[in-house]
Length: 421
Image (cartoon, rainbow, N blue to C red):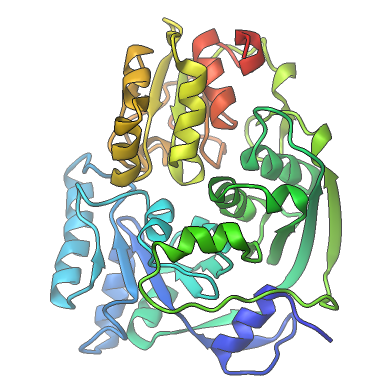
């Protein structure tokens, strides 16, 4: 019996010829990631182990991105722990303010994560890197601590679900819409502990930005990881960034899948996930009566250059509604610089949006965009649980960048078509 790409990567890193779903394995990891919320816990546990060195100072990434720029004393203390640990163990991939970015945009951009890698991160959206053809998944801080010491982690091999997307995408529809539509179809536990493998002609023509968005939100369907078999688009992205060798894995034609689902993308409109679940999905055009107070364009889901271009196309020559505040967050310093060079930042500021340095901030209700009681936001982020962005009686709607930008202009949920685009 053949194996899926997910099974092949796990088998390779476990030193086995093959693995099967449900099997418990111990595997060598390529990258261990933690941030300013999860790393302090991992660091404390690591120190308890009593080892004198990390397993590989070049294969640990510490990214202070959640409460940065540091919002208060507690956040500053958390970030200092990362800095001190990085200095003590000479961690190569530690990123200070001015060099930092949102972790799941930064690591691929820096060539730290590559195809065929086995990556664990003390952050649930580590599954983003599946867009590169890596097996990447979130773990607890204690697992991250053990991995920093040993370079290994245990896994239960997941079953795989295949999602085939065919047909031509409508204008203003992208990876964010496809994954929201999929989660709306299968539910927030529809792929529980599965590997969601995305394929089909719509994926074949999708840029990396859309692929990252789709794999990023696999966790919102309960998945262990989201993954896409690498192709020319992947290799073009990786070739100019990779600093070490990598290996391409594919799925065998006779690989076994728990389930296969197909979607006709020509029938999928821009969609919005309504409170309080990413699965509560409706066409954006059905929600035009919902007024909003805030727009957030950014995050590890949609803060890449292509996302900013899409938002700027909608905002150019227009103003944010006077009753709405709009926050735009480039995901990394490089993206910020490119957006500046292309004139995107000027478009945002002229539209009366505010542009933030790279941070997760508003996405988790951390800072720089907290909602008050009764307020509503539409965001390109990945979660809209109760209290996610502030007050427990606030509401968050999830969309793609174009819908978020159009909504900011209209003062209510709306579409670019309403602006004549």
